[in-house]
Image (cartoon, rainbow, N blue to C red; front, top):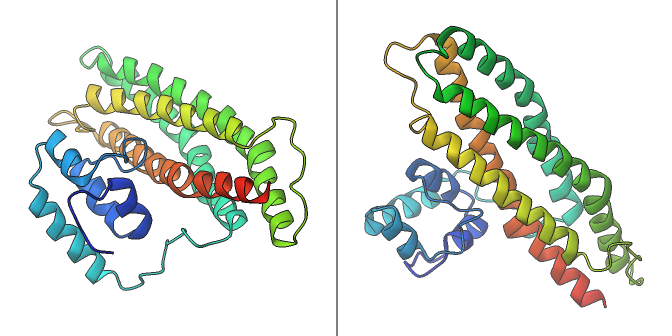
Length: 241
């Protein structure tokens, strides 16, 4: 893919998965806010766009397996299965672990670091929303997308859906993505960019590292859905009508 400053961040992330690490390292939103051009995203973050172009070109060149993680042409059912296994699985494993770390840090350091109690409230809100969100995807939306894909491949009519168009649940999922991203952004701000205080204990450092990894994984999760799975599902529905 030719790198230009007017290409959107979303388009980079879709075409060149190797670009995701570059965007993450610079704090450039490639999922919910990925509709900005690279130029606008760099301007907003006060980042040298020429340096970013260089990093993107290097990342693409140095990628040893260009097809690894490139989901734009994979079957929709494969993408959905990957999201459930990797990203839903990650959230379910990490949620209780981070909750325990939050409790420990609040107990030991809450009086001198009151922001951690606020972070706990925000994290609880994120995980409660995600728990319901993931169930709706696994039990309703993803199975329907799989059925729709099979019908199209076999030349059959699209299966009926109680929610009407697939655009309806997708719109709800994308709105929930925005909500979760906003809550995690607040956590990032309260934690000073997930930077533990000077002299912090290993538990405190482990908490902030875990929260940063949680945010990073959610960004990748949302990217796969907002930028790849959902647009292709809507295109497939339109083509099958």
